[in-house]
Length: 415
Image 1 (cartoon, rainbow, N blue to C red):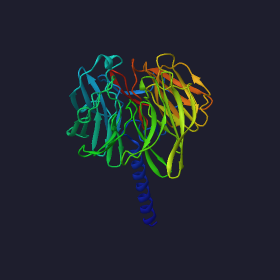
Image 2 (image 1 turned 90 degrees about the vertical axis):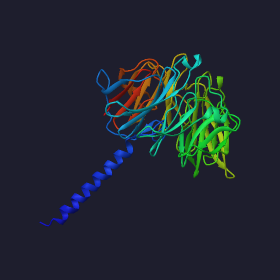
Image 3 (image 1 turned 120 degrees about the vertical axis):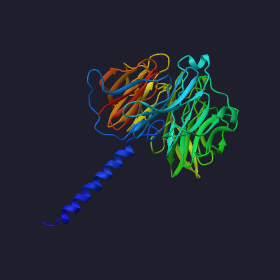
Image 4 (image 1 turned 120 degrees about the horizontal axis):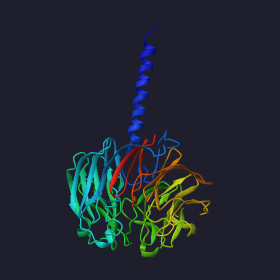
C-alpha cells in the first residue's frame, strides 16, 4: 500500500488539530470588562447541566483584598485589582494555582463615602497585545508590561484634566478602539478621552456631559463604528475616531446614577436601565440623511438595573432588577419591554451566559446555574460560595469560572 494517502491523512489530522488548538487558544481569553464582546456572553461548550450539592468543582481559592474589579484571563495568567488599607494593587496571578506572579501598588486614600460599601477599586483592567491598562479609585491610570508588571507609563487623570473624583471613586473600565485606549474622565470638554496605547499621549478629548460609573461599548451600525456611553443623564453615541457626538437620548435618574453598561442587540437596538425609580428603555437607531437618529422604542419602570449587568439571549434581555429593596432576576422583551416573568430567590446579582446556560452570582455570594427562556428561569443548581458583597461579575473562559468577593478569589471547573 502506498504511503502517500497515509501522509496526506496524517497531514490533515495535524492541520485539524492545529486549527482546533488555535480556536481553543482564541476562546481562552477574557481581556476586558464583559469578556470578548463586552456583553458577558461567551462562546463555549460542554458546561455541566447540573452541579453537585456543594457547587461546582473548586480548583483553588485564595485570599485577596477588597474590591469589585472583575477578573481578566489571558492564557495562563489572570489579572485584577484589589485594595489593602490605603493602597491599591494591580495584580497578575497564575491561572492554574492562583499564586501571585507580580503586583504593583499605588497610594490611594479613601473617603467615608467610598468605604460605605467597599472603597474599590471597581474598574476592570484591559489587555491589549503585550500591555495591561488599569485605572484606580483615585483616577491613576497605569500601563504595564503584562508579563513582568513593569510600568511603561502612568498619569493622574484627576491632575491632568482637573477632574473631580466621584464620591464612590472612579469605576469606568477602559475601552480599546483601534490604536487608542478610551476612558470617560470629566465634564467640560473631557467627557471622553482617547489615549495613545504606547505613550499615554492624548489623541482626542471631547464632551460636555456628566460622567458616571458606566463603561462604554463599541457598536457597528450601518457600516459605521460608534462608541455608546451611558452618561449621568443620557445615552449617547460618538465617533470613536475623534469623539464627535453623533446622537443622544435622555435617560435621567436620581443622583445621576446611570451605572450599567449599555447592551446592544447587534442590529439597531440599545438597552439601558437604571435604579432609584428610574427604569429601562430601548433606543432604536435609524439612518436619515446620512445621520444616526435615535428613537425611543419603549420605556418601563418595571426593570431597574442597579450596578449589575444584563445579557441578551434571542429576543429578550435578562438581568437583576432592584436597588435597596427586593431584587428580582427577570426578563424583558427587546421589542416591547414586556416582562414575562420575575424570579424570586436572588439578591442583587450579576451573570454570564454561555452554552445556553446562565451562571448567576448574587450579592450574598450565592452561585446558581440556570436556563433562561422567555417562559421562565429554570434553576438547576445553587451553592453558597462567597460573602457579602459579591458584586464583581463572573468571568467564564471555556469551562473555567473565576469569581471573587471582597476577601477571596476562586477558580471553578464548570465543565
